[in-house]
Length: 255
Length: 374
Image 1 (cartoon, one colour):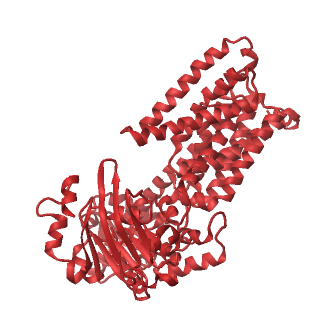
Image 2 (cartoon, chains in turn orange, yellow):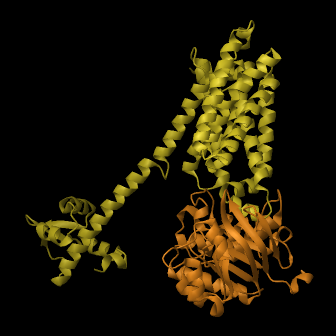
């Protein structure tokens, strides 16, 4: 990590992603400074989730390079924590809260080795941070939406990475949980970690984040919230009446 | 029947067969749990049916009913079916369920055609290839059981080694991918393990019903437990018991193929579990009815209490009609009152009137503050 001091936490260069004949992300260039808290906003179908996934190589890139602290993502997996959309998994899966959180330690353990006492302690302390310690032995099927989101966050905390990628962490959670998650994310950035979150509620952007990336297939704007989070850029991303640019041609023009 | 059982367990050949059935059960219970947890129950069905053409082709090519070639043929054609399904779904607009339906019928149909052809070959009768349809455990010999055991041990070893990786694969493959685990390799490994379980079940259970041997024990086990480890172990146990019982049943009655006998056993357990486990159909219905009854009783108790408070007399008696009006819940107040009377919380005061007993007044205090306040 010695060479990474000058590099941004995340650097995305010329990133393009396509599903079939549909371009989902077009030529994205994005730099996320270390220690910042960044909102990724944009209309439905703007490619927000795809951005988060393609940074981590979960969807194939047509073109583009992603580096974390100056090195290719593939060499920096352990520096990145991922909080997927809550709805992307089956919460009826037969497992307990603490065992789910422990999955965050699997990457450090590597192949075949099983989690032991150390990993258990780590999971419990992560649960304490998200105020879910009393639910440690509970079945995950018994959790409310907000509790599920806290468990996912705890699992990411166990990874002890320096970059956190969150996909809609506030989707369908109550106000208390939202505030708790914001507090934890702020603690992370105060401690020099970097947070990138897909965000839907434009009303809370200024309150929660200092940086923003406005996306609609292409990158409309990115930078400090007080500089680029304005109606002009939102119009570009969300359109006047039309919510987004469905055609590939128009999306290219928008870049 | 008891005599028969003693005979069965003391006889060497019978012990071999039962050992085979039990081993098969353990393996298919464990492996089937993964098919269920990955929501790929149907894949097991496709693969077991798709094994048939491989079995028959192996026989036609080799000319003898030799174990190993038949197992390899079965595995190859099962894997080919899955490969074709993936090919079709990723290169066309055909959805997975349609592709699976097609693969199953095409492969199984081809298998039946080949089987008819093979049975017209001179030494087809000795071959007894049609036993692979519904299984015949009586034909198991020591060598077969050995192959079942070795293949089964391989499957269990893989599951044991990659326990945590398989858990990731089943629960959150994307997350597993970000931690550097190759989900593609794990997917292949799970498929390999499922195929090996199917292959060793061909002789005992047969291609038609083998998928139930994978799915039903896992479904039954899931009803009783909330942990993945306990689910896998319980599924193995259920499948082993069903395997042994089914083999014994099929041996005890003339002309009952082993496959159907085993599947009847495992289905009975699965049905029972779905209906009567702590989260089962009847248990939930029962809990639901009980809690409705309790809530209604609490309403009536509280209504009596509220009216009594208005009169500054905890034992003040009220008419049933007034209670029914006051509750406004649209349910049978008389029924709740007689249940409360049976519990000793209320008593009759005259023809139409009811009042709280001292124990009823105490019971009011037991209600939560939320229920007590208006």
